[in-house]
Image 1 (tube, helix red, strand yellow):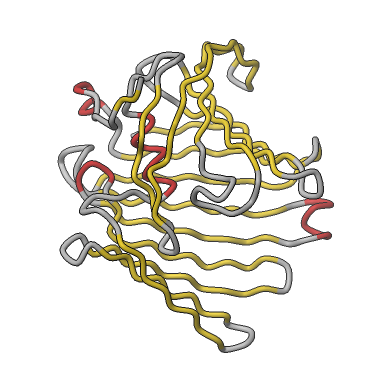
Image 2 (tube, helix red, strand yellow):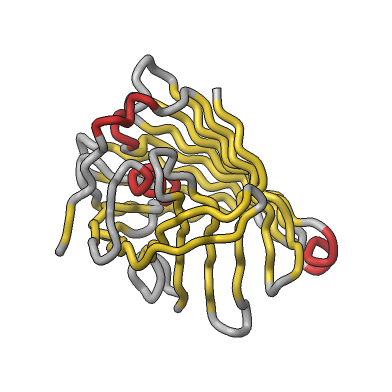
Length: 239
């Protein structure tokens, strides 16, 4: 049975800054590091906030295909996205992508610059008054209490496309992590297979089954030619 994204009442106990470090693995090989930083910009944790994500390859993977990405998302109340900015250095590609979300016009404006070719791509898409980027959607999911068998619909846009993303709570699992064995709930977010992204694949998220709702593992399974990318939480810092 579907359930809309309703923020939990105890969310005011959330930290005003949270840093999550992840070890990234590709095809069972250490591939890089990801750092997620969420900062509240108001007295309420459900008010305006900023998210920064830094992704950097390392080792053999970096020699094959170097990645150095920085992503910033500014969000209003209830994690409704206002604008995002991405600088992506991936292999020989060098791009900047900015998306502005206008709730009054119900429109997202996408602008991507190829810094190597000095070329620009612009796009617009219709959105509801409150929409989330993928990072904001993860924050919304953390604020929900979805037991196995329950689903939610979360409005998500990347500036190119808008979709109501189905998120399904699938099962409870004990997961071995660097913090020990944790009780988690595994979710699947249906963003692939031409929903938000064209690629065929699966996105699974394991969150602790407690008030912290920590995303301790994120797994992206794509076609065989690309394989599986896994992010495992290695460090948590709150203030």
